[in-house]
Length: 379
Image (cartoon, rainbow, N blue to C red):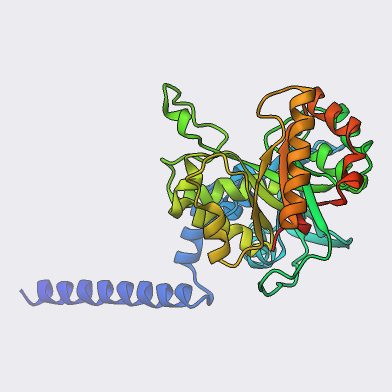
């Protein structure tokens, strides 16, 4: 009987000793100190887990910071390594860069950074190398912040001003060349998903034209039997989806000074959606031009309430396509500028419209009206 009790006591002491050792070993591992059992177990577990690809680490981190994958252009460099390009405001880069670098360092990746500056933007280049010779590069194009200008009452105009905006650009470089050949200030508004959007913007900027984003928005007529909502802002979107898509569109066209709506007779009546859009323009110090595709638009008034530099379209130059029609509308625009001091006309790159402008450029002098960019009309 005594021997049995002694054996049980020895067993209890042994169990207690083992548990004490395990407990001390766990505490040491938890504190990051030297540990035998737990360090070995977790090292074995971690060794069996596949390490994520650096490309996925980058994309996931950017997405968590509010930059959707659709805003990141992915390609291959000459060596075949992944290359990511993205455009974003400088303050957004400053916000996401530290977290992205931390995520890369967690993967034991090295990051080499370079910075280049010009008048329009600052470019940050990241060269990243990971384990097993994994390589990729990141190129962040960041627009320089523009000092905010305090909105005030419009100053009296010393002369009559008229701005001509040509919408729906980004499909024909030949049409852009014709506009450049007019040799007067013209504002070109570029559709973000057009095939030559970036090239059109760069060429226009180099030739001294003003660039705007032509923001695709839902029209009232769109609801009539057409459920395809790809590629434009529509009324069924949440405010967050509107914000993401608008930021995506803003990033697709470089050198923009302002934004006007493409279609949009439904969206420009929707205050919550327009407030989201205009808020993003205000953050970037971009002006807003209401195309006034509907008389019920609230967009211009809301922009004024929010303190944006803004204006609205007075004349459509080619609501009917024809040289004679557009010439007549140009005269209406100049007469309105004479009467009110300023006016905005919107046209499209139709051959008839461009011919009418070319043949009637002299009318600006005859009516004593100065052609200006849209940014010189807004206030």
